[in-house]
Image (cartoon, rainbow, N blue to C red; front, side, top):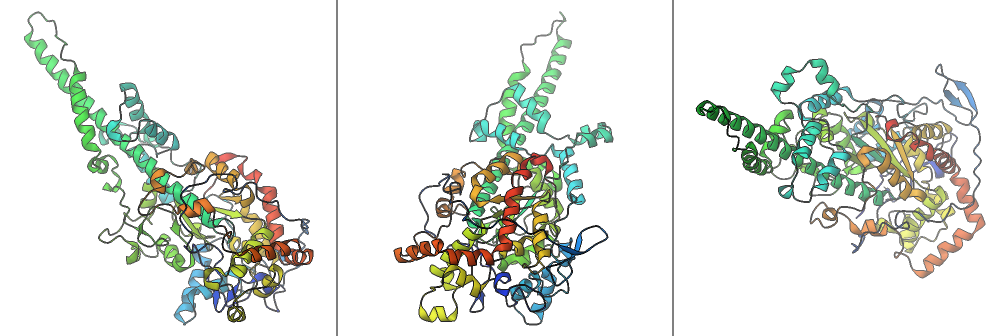
Length: 617
């Protein structure tokens, strides 16, 4: 499975007026097609899932020796707000943009496409800053953006249907057993659940003071993201982490649905008990009038009537029909009829697609440019899935304990388009290790149908360049800077400094591949929507006949091992020990090294305040 093919780029990241090396700034191109950085096609499905430290990235070799001192950026000119508007080492001014819904490269690429230029080529020309007179890297907003319409709708749902589903509630439901039909709860448990999780019916809401109803709602006070945009930096465990996220989306839906089933069952039992008590009270009153002694015979215990009625009503509620009445917002329940574009023919359950072939459609659909998804996104006969791109659809899903994760190299800036609380997550890797892996994959292994080879290499039938020579010729070094701060020359100081600032924003979380297990655990521990991320994938996900896991990816972590001959492996190891090759590679990657060193220094700080500090972009 080719997980993602980064697009072709005609514009190099540099020309004579911009003062940066084209070999380090542009993305790799070969025969008009950009090399596919991530994803190993045709990975064999393995028989077991591995959560060992090696599989999760712990215990990998430490970064190769390199210079780590970063120069202090000299600023020629500052803006009125005090930020640097012209770095000394850059030829152009620095003017970051903070509104990707307006300044996204989508609009430019659409115009260029209408004029006959390949859409993705025009998009990357914009991403690389070729189209602008100044450096305009995207700046993740520092202020929280809760998305007011989403929050208003969520507020109404919490008053009507109870608080949103939380990890604590899903744990309670899971403890009851596998099948809802076999659940048994005593009165105390039923009434505790009703008090904690059920909403107010219309009569109760009308009887309460409006201010009291407002204070009862727990509307996402911390702006926890509903959507996470996963910025995929190639050759940084992106395909593996995607499968971890897919397993988590599956887990949230499974657990959330069970929690909602319990709510429906508790609601039915409470209604049945009220009816039984009312009927029994009426019977007692009638018999008291008939008893001349004035002694009421209480042998007709209402619990008998309650037991019979609640069993019947609760069983009927599990068929799904009563969910629409209880989960009453807009009168709908979930319909997973929306396909996942990245995984052809698979319903809308796993991580959504922000890879190049589908990026434009996903971006425009979720920003509301059109309400109907492309026809091939729907399961035959299913139709629209409750306007899932709208604030209503997303608030509904968030209330049910679900989340959405969008994955792709172009994901930075997507939060400005989506109309719900949104955050960013990415994985960074030691740049030298990433480049060596990329070289082994694209050059030595000739992966993706030799997309990383030149015409001469194809004629020869091999790519024999050492890693430094390969990237000196092909480029594609400053990818992390490019993807974290798009719309600027990735070789510029302006882009590099903005990429650093973006990593420090409250709504951004970054993992390090060398500490991947730790990062996955911290996401699970600090952000409610990621609770359980560090658990093994659900068995139902691993064994699903459709939409399920790529077990091979989870087991092998998309490694190149096994694709190279012994001679190739030996040659790669010789180059790794060659000081001249490594010195040249470090020189090419000095901006990426500076960014990575910054990230490692900031890594632990982002978790200090826990999930309470996660804002929405």
